[in-house]
Image (cartoon, rainbow, N blue to C red; front, side, top):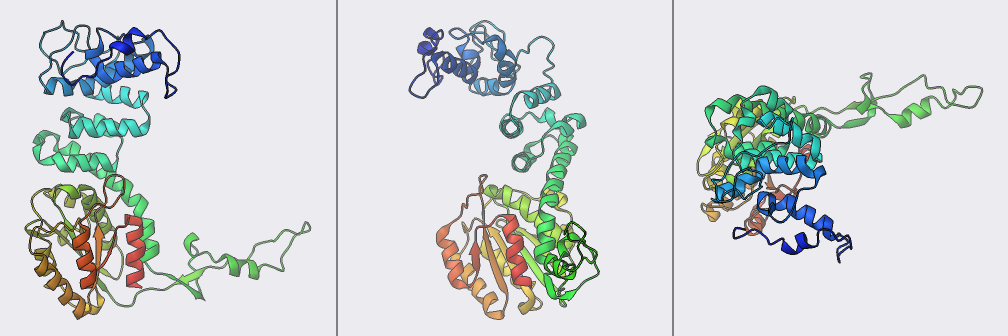
Length: 408
């Protein structure tokens, strides 16, 4: 057994016992789990139960690549199907009748594992093990489960991928963006598109404007023989609209750790671009600044153009925003970053103070990790807040509400 592979002798020698250990798991079940975890290197001491053959082969197709990448040879009786000491293999053997092409493996994994596990395996297949053949066939791409994690992994490795899979990458990101837009757009329409004006009645009969209190009052005298209300007069509220245009300048940090935030920022800018009364400027930055305003309406193109990685010069981006301000009192600058400043913090704070004193509203959105936990330089964030920027760690849904409060 190679270095780094956990010993399984004890689990194997007691595989027939069913007594539960301290954690409530029997020796038999513990041995089964270790066999699935270790793969081919446990083959000499642990057998794969008949019911686990498909699980073992599906896991092996992907995760045996980890052993091969470390230079380990395939073990006797392992998933590679070669004798001990033979060359390692990147291919897993499959049970009779199972197609382990990329598409076959994807379908098998989908059928065997819970959705959350399946999504994680997709991400590791593309981002960690380079299974780019998954992106080379349209049917395979359509069979993949779109998720923010998958799109983030693709954005991080996109520059290393073969041009032949460019269409597949675009299609996956399109599907993820469509899903995020479908979820976020109603929140922005409600929060930013205009607030309810309960003093005026509207004939625009849409569900979000339904006024249930006035509807009840208007129909109190209408009841049937059983005493049930007959609703004949349905009332709706009007909505306040902004009379003046707001300029919203979105500055997005595109350093390597910002992939997930970049995805949501591009989508938010695209939604805002379609709302009346808002002029959006979208700016991506690392140590340089790129004005993407001409693509703000198309988040997919923004994401496929962005270049993740490199350093971070937030001060330079904020100075660029200064030059874009037309009417300070009707301008919002939203900075999306982890606030790890690679440039001059003093220059950054000076630029923020100038913008704030001119009347510009400044919002700072801290980066969130994959579990929606904030991950940012708290020291710089505190200094920015002291200089006049409102700083918060918010989900995109809460950002919509925050921006709506500012604009109305």
